[in-house]
Length: 387
Image (cartoon, rainbow, N blue to C red):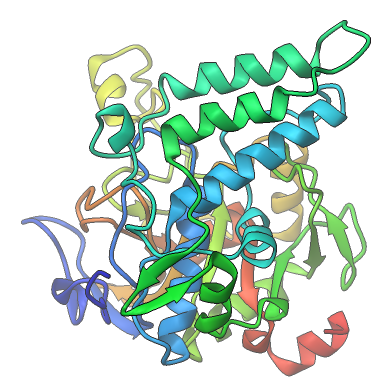
């Protein structure tokens, strides 16, 4: 197990800055999280953030500091997604992405194991971390060959063959294992953790479906067709702020391909357009700025987000289901402007060593959905949702 990070990093506990000239933040409220992980070259943010959220829940509940195994969840999920793709003749896409619900589903159905019970990510292929550059085309090609086959019968052995592909990369599932002197199965280990998995719900905020009801978010990686409760934007933001201030973390699904989401660790929504088109430049190639000069918004020029803006972004594919993270705190900058503190899964990357600061405007605009303990939802809102 990794050491508990009560304040993400000691350098962030009071005033956070990683290098000279970096924007400084003072913590307003910070909840316990576990160590920063690295998904490396894999589309597994949904799993890293989902398990990180549950690790934070275990810390909040006083259960201890756990490092849960991503490979166990990912391998089960990829088999399930392949099965769904084949059953729908390929109409459900096969990809290495997923949703927070995939993590919740895996915990409920398959259990969980601690890190170290399966081979370390990437190790079976000679890598130090996950690297799906070879695995992706193999998985995708195999599933497509079955799902789009013109044969009259599906081979009875396809699942066994696909399971061998997964096992070659991720390793074999453990049926029993030792942990701190006791023998567990994945199911008994899950039960020992003491999480009530019925306590967790997904929330979102869009106008094309009724508020205070649940609906299936129409995104490709929601291939299990999981439902989210729909809230007006002001109440959606109230839930997130209230949760953090009352000691809860939550899993945050958001669009990180926006101009204002910079790789220096700050996400804002500038009210003005970018001035310098750098498309095709070497700077754009290496900084990941989508060809635009990154200019962060200060408290005076950040856009005011409305429900209509959120909906327009979703309807026009401007807001996409890009990345899963964990929101665990609130901090303020030198001007007193508040940001959500975000735990990422790119290793100790960037100015703040694996932590991002997302303005409240950015969160209001670009949040796709969140996974949260329903006890963290204010009672009046919970009553409206009937949960």
